[in-house]
Image 1 (cartoon, rainbow, N blue to C red):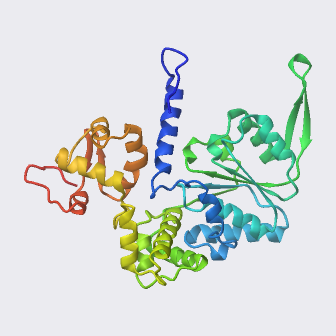
Image 2: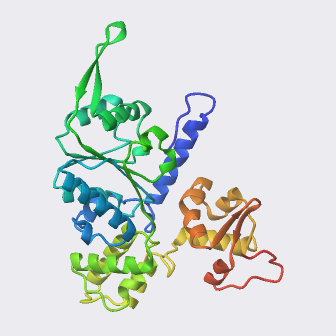
Image 3: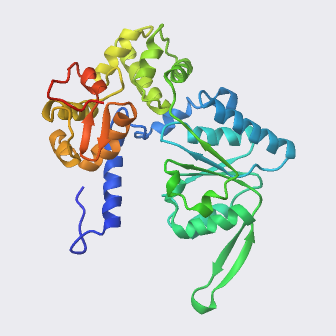
Length: 364
């Protein structure tokens, strides 16, 4: 998409936003992306558990949240505001729905980007019922004016509505019923301290181990009506990057494979064959991940190599490589970022079926 410049150069802030949007769009096209694809949120509804006891994974967080909700029920008051932080696809929206269901109260859903002005948030707040849950996804993207309005609403349960303009404008305080805000963010560090301090409970979601993902895949397969043979759920979990959303997406693609090939049950080899079609290997690496590793190992002898050179070699924008591809490769130990550039680890060499030569002096 072409971007028209109104001035001689794009400002740093606008450039950063444009790059962020570009990377997000690229990420959403990947089968192993943690971002929702198309109408996937609608598809995920049937797989969402409705009770905390049915939520798989995050055992410590579940215990903390269960205690938090039980105490609020015994006190017969809405619980304190809740902040859910963590990478995308781990279940923040699902947990928000579960909280409302456990409390037996309605939930109103919105997001930071959907609120353009403070007035948008004021209209949402003024429509809340007593005890209702207000879920704000991507809360770190709220406009500054809306953040300041939310401060007062969360602490004092009131909003100040401005009537009129200019010197004659007056502020009318509007009392709100007691409610609970659940904020979800993938970038907790971008939240202002005053907003973060108003949450009484903060939950950090972590990536899932393979064992937990395997249980999640088995549960989802039951909901979707797929019969998995021994080892099939394990193969799916190994390719899901520790992310439930990716696990469910891959499961649906395997279901498509089984339907097309008239398979009554799905075995481990069927999973491998189905996901090979989508270029997803045993470690959850896709085409772009393998291209980056191949470029570092084969073209730059393991590195170090600068980001721009690496991006040019794989034919992608440097922002895409840095924000979309590298985090998982670094987290899984395939890649190391050094002051001189990116370096492939021994694990990367071995994954490509290669051995570092004698001239490769730095292999982690």
